[in-house]
Amino acid sequence: MEYQNQLKLQSYLDEELPEDEAREVANWLARDQEAVALLTELRQTRQAVTGFEDGIRLPESREFFWSKIEREIQRQEAHTKEQAPRIPWALRFRRFLMPATGLAVLALLALVVTREGGGSASDSSVETALEDSGAFTYHDDSAGATLVWLSYPADNEGADNDDWDSLE
Amino acid sequence: MRASQNGDMGAFEELVARHRDKIYARAYSMMRNEEEAVDLSQEAWVKGWQRLRQFQGDSSFGTWMTRIVINLCLDQLRKHKRQRTESIEEMTEESGGVERHMPVVTINPTAGLERGELRQRIDRALGQLSHEHRTVLVLHEFQELEYKEIAKVMGCSIGTVMSRLFYARRKMAALLADLRKEDSK
Image 1 (cartoon, rainbow over the protein chains, first blue to last red):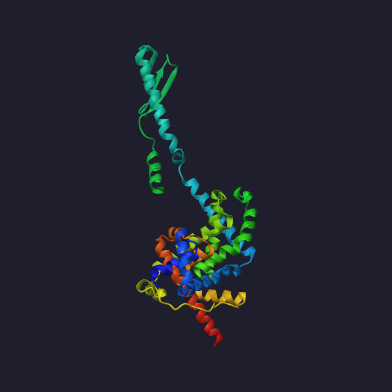
Image 2: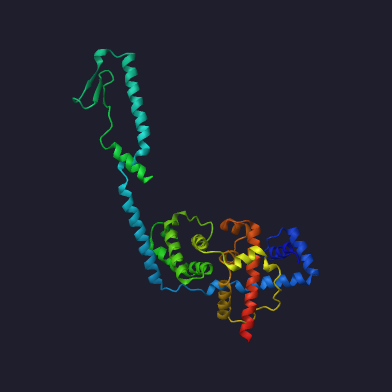
């Protein structure tokens, strides 16, 4: 018997054949004893194997097995919690930093436009708030707003970025 | 189930107690090693707890859990395979396809056997299959997957699944017949 036909018999047994092919195989079985014998062997093996797992029992007591699972769950959860605080707060809020920066820029632009459009020079002033600090204060009387501008990065900004790279 | 999904460990312990034999049995069928099967089924339960919220109830909880343990077993078997050379049996299959020419076993080799004895013989015969053949057999007969589903799980073609399943069944029939002959001597 050809190998393809042998596999077709198996597919017939496993109900994996389309209806028309299954009909063809049924007709073939009606006139070929060799095919019937092979199909019988395959079916007997399938039946013998079925139910094999039913008699298998975990060789550990309920309490002992569960205690191992519980301990592993707790160990992994503790490990996850340990990892969490190591992430700098700035990284956790990173997703908000970009839109917040955008909003700040827009607010600054709005102030500048307001000033150039109608406000008099006397309504606003720019000054360095602290000597040699790189911080500027912009005050607009007409808008009733004060803006503090820090022109250099914070001292620990670079360290935060290093942490982020290593975490990634 | 709902209580477990809400973090109730007591409720989860009940689920473990109810399904632990089935999950272990699936791991044992695939690994054929008690110690590894215990470790993998334990790992499956830990993963099950961690992913419990993802369980939607599309299948039974038992089926969902057996999928987890099967995946763990497949990973483990892949690791084993990387560590060892091909077995003679696998080489024979690749080179000639001996299953095509095996004589048909005409007498049912397991007829009249008691349940325990039958299980013992199946166990011995399963142990003589390569892990690829055993896995296909387990996924088809115990997990009741279709050919295409097995192909997806094992990362091979449907044709390979069909030929592996055919080989596994024919080899099992021959082994069971040999065991019967041995017994009758």
